Image (cartoon, rainbow, N blue to C red; front, side):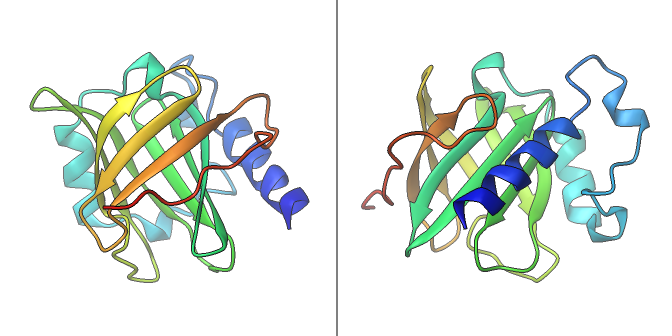
Length: 155
């Protein structure tokens, strides 16, 4: 399972366009356009861009599953092992806060709107408006899983 997640992370980060501005012009096979909704489009318009500290691949565990959150530019994607669909949306500054807005094609509402409580070089804490609550993520460097994955934080 870990090898599959590393492959998914590599695919997500490789499809990001590298932040050179040209990534938005090329459609990615790993990013189906049909899953975008008007909710994520309106949220993306309100977001001005994620800080450099948010950029990258972040990993946590929840309910025995691995959760991968990838942020590149203003785009965000979330993958949970065991779920067939992955969520996508926007990340960035909104009303002076760093926010993440996601839409999941399977209708899952666990992680729809997240407020970044703190972010450092190695970890990030996000409070989700859905039933997930607060989660702490560890940064994945170079498409590799971190040596220790955090567990879901208590609310």
